[in-house]
Image (cartoon, rainbow, N blue to C red; front, side, top):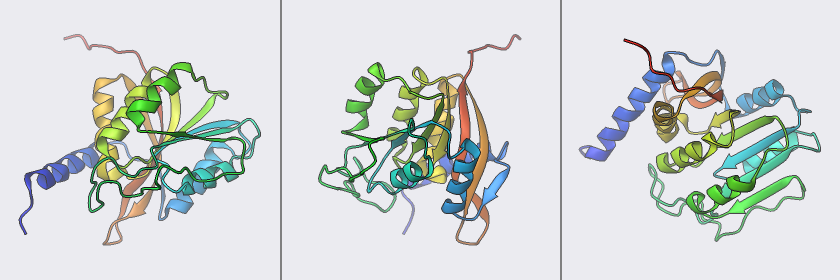
Length: 222
């Protein structure tokens, strides 16, 4: 079966984004997502009061993991998701995959909050009145889709001058969204750790953790 124009475009964009990443890759590398997550917790500090925002919660596995690992009582964990599934088809997954019929996962942790709705509807009003309660902010981009991830990144730019980030599907849409975002917004990005291998066992940045900070827009003189 021949590839469609959209498939060819996606492959070109992913190749471009991976090449951009490889210009300055993360120094710490791990085989598995679990190893990477353990490293992230130790890097930030399990007893550090942290604010964790997750874009794309699905069944809540990541929220559960990080809320258990970051133990400080002043830490806060906020997850954004429609809980109706993907708003569009993504890779081999159909539209509305991950549908939970609008029901958020349950949590007994009073530090956990779920914000239900499509990002475009709920994120702007949330950020308009929200201030992080701690200086350490950790953003988990797990929305899968390019448009959803890019929207979240652009919304955060005016609210958070610096934060740690984890891109959960970096070599799919996340890398393209990140570099498109960085081409429009003045930011400095430092990649700190990565995890994952491809089908041939070659280490690749399937998941990437780093730090982003807003910078002043400058135009180089001729």
